[in-house]
Length: 395
Ligand SMILES: *Cc1c(COP(=O)(O)O)cnc(C)c1O
Image (cartoon, rainbow, N blue to C red; front, side):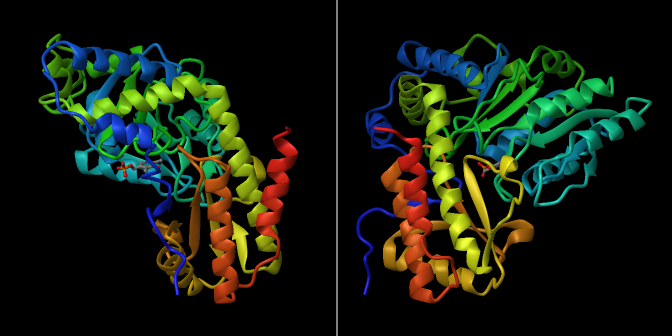
């Protein structure tokens, strides 16, 4: 017995659903890579990146997933042996730091938990203690996709300023860009890292780095630079050089369409839609949690991300059954806990190309799996999600 049919519905925190309009935009022959339309698309995409990061900085486009952009960011501004402070709030900033470790950086992790945002006071204290200015960069994620915590980037910037410290401030926005407010210039971020397959609604394979002035200055003396990631080489006038080789032609067609969609919906409307669909998810999870089996991984409501919700299960043995039931019986791909939450959590993504029927369908399918499998849960989670949306979306 199965009620699965048609396409798999992705409720994982990346890759996310690619809109049909974006898929269609890629269904065409390739064009000249030297001049004409593709060069215009590259130039427009760079403007789109500045728009969505609210930055006047310099964007770079990489044929790589987010892990590639991490490496691009580090190698362009740092030198072998430099000390780098990683702010832990889940697994992603730490993963970025691990990449730096293999590059020969001296990584120090400011320990955090998987259950709360980075405390700006701890950052300030650590930087104040660095009286010799040994720390060259601070790495953090805006949203950690493992824990589903949201860090307060502007508060972390203030902590760096309060300490009077000159470290570069480098932020991974892969799980947040296009789902919530981000202000690279206003918040004094020196390097922003992003990727195309989450809030930006594209199929995976392209990622981005936006460099501020201070980062471009550090670039001049960085000795970790390599041919492929190098910003100087990529700033040459020839279009081909800005990709260090052949451009990702069809990805560029797709990205152009996804940014058309982002511009026509408008950033504020997109952020509001994410706030509402995340709110519906949290309403359901709150209800489900009443039976004591399920709970929010992030206890403080104001620290919960609008792009993904990590839900803990007391009995981790239930998780594979829930996952498989959703997938095999219903065609829903639900996210699993990763890193220290592997085998302990489910993740419900609510980022990118998503509307109320998709969200309510995901929540309804999950609740259906709880019932079918006998997972203890408070009744009426979906009803609560509907109530939240009806109350917040007036006619
Ligand atoms: C998904 C994600 C990454 C990794 O991106 P890949 O494209 O899988 O390499 C890095 N950081 C954050 C915050 C993410 O959500």
